[in-house]
Length: 249
Ligand code: PEP
Image (cartoon, rainbow, N blue to C red):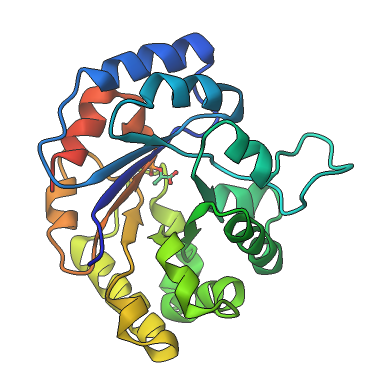
């Protein structure tokens, strides 16, 4: 059975002392629902965050990684480096990585392969831009992002993948896909998985929605049958807001 998950993507926010302070606030919150909780701090704070949360049910994840095992890739971090500080999950394909750092479907395919080979779980992000949606092409775009990066994989590895649908026009803009728009796309994603891999994969896949999820809209979005949680940006930087979203399940 698929899991409900709420993941906080901290992006390039919070230095070490701010990370420690936010984690301390998070530890005072209660998970009253049934969602798994993850947070993704910056690389410099992963080790400290992992140690601070290792006896709790909050999982610490990485925001990105390089596909190579090691070598002359200045400024990059590999899967084994991430694993070596205790991290089990990495976010890949965030629209900011695609837009600002030139991450193509082909690069992401290599990253997904490297992460899975290192036994990391992958939260794979994708989503259409506003122009795609205005042209009615959102399903074509999303299907090709998923196919290009994931459809070479064996069905057995999908237990280590979580999908995050994040329409680019809703990220950090305050504009949210309506609960029905999210449901329609999540249903389409599940069907796309089912057509290729069958129900074993499609029905067990957690599909998160991301894009301006806040305490006041989370419950309605999460109430949709194909929405299994959220990837949260801005609202993940405040412990009370984040846990209001976690507890919206
Ligand atoms: C994100 O960055 O993945 C995101 C969904 O951000 P926000 O919640 O701020 O829109």
